[in-house]
Length: 411
Ligand code: ZN
Ligand code: ZN
Image (tube, rainbow, N blue to C red; front, side):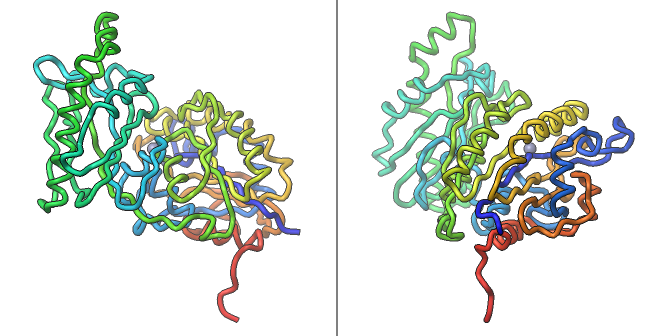
């Protein structure tokens, strides 16, 4: 019997480099993780370059690669994927931006790039959506709040380019920048003009909004300007169901990952209490996974907190979070008829506080795998496993082969 379903558990930024604080072990090696070790013992292990050896992946490009969408072809910047993740449907050719609400002083200087980490901005986004008019450019737009101070902007219209700069000066105490065309084409110049007009009109609307007057009265900084960055043109994604003949869902706290899922045609599944941080509701995510697998052939779940600990350089927190994840995975063990793949999207070593190109550990567990001699799920143990060293692009084809959905190449 082979399994019929595939589950990808992607533990974001899981892997690391040897840490002096842990006597030369990585947080994953040092963590107590009986479930992951059991999967390694009963499965086939390896290490994986999610994009290619020596390439430091972003979470976005890594997830595209793991889903079998070559990021060199499909990745067109973060903006359009953030738009999808915010629930804006992006047609190919639309231009997307990731945005923040920020605070500008009466003197015109940015004083808080996150507007005091404001949340619940839906009312503000609604007045912007209703009040800003870009019709003289022949452009329609959708502006939507994301988590916290975040938002997304999508533009639709003829003759728009996607190579434009940001109005975010990336520091406080200076004025917002003007959005400029990067390539000096007519298309980019038009998009830049549209962006500057959007900022001008939305700033005027935000200045007088009662929610901001109330914030000021409460001693909070107002959310009175929108900063935008990450411009990109939405690409044409071959739908997942067409590409592989199976349907699927995506479960993630980060709108970027949900957006990638939506872009390829996976169904996003909301889970209450997921934060993308170390306090996230992992148990709720795993329950949602089990629920989705009742009706779907494929589920990708992203668990984010280890990446955050890596970016912060917090070795002990990273180890503790891995132990929490391990416990949360217990309900997956009795899963029947499902091939389980556990891996990271990239390493986030505490020593460099950013993503690195160090390959990630991967285990495939389920009916039919050639069980190897690896008994621990970690960076060095998995390097001795039966998968050897693979690329992210190989993962979907290998999983499809194991569930008997691969097509024969040749006679
Ligand atoms: Zn990541
Ligand atoms: Zn990261």
